Length: 202
Image (cartoon, rainbow, N blue to C red; front, top):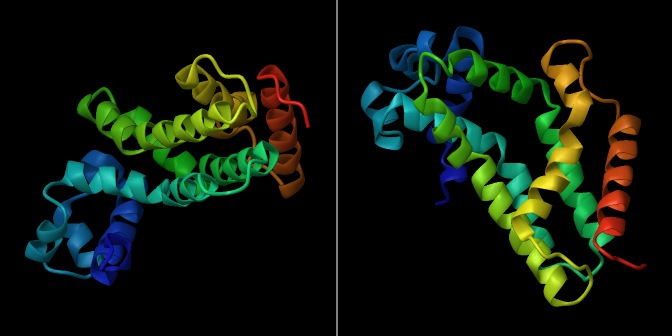
């Protein structure tokens, strides 16, 4: 059985996400999470070694749809517009979601008191995303579809362009997410700009 197919594990993750968002990392107790799941504390610890491990799993779970998309485009046709658009849509849906914004604010708020959270979260979310992104771009480069001299930099660049000022405004509470039209416009412009900068000719 896959981890994501385990109903008790998923119930713990759902309860933990609600607890972390409502009470912060320091304020969310393992006991309360187990009770909300509802499972026993030993059952919770059978799935997650510690509260840190549980928090990392919550972030990993949030990124799962994006990781699934990145995995799927590895085997698709050689059309980078289709592949990059799929990745961009999954990424935008993730980072502009209300829960993701709340978790991001939580991480920043807790960072000073729990400095280990920063590295933990980076390993759980951005690292696997960037690794798969680089792998996809490498395949496009090997097929001479695009010209990419620095895979890591280009991977960062693509995802960073999808964040930008609008994402910062959402984090500050100056706007509430993006409409579907705004998402489509952002994805189309970033994909077109990225491909033009990497020598793609349709």
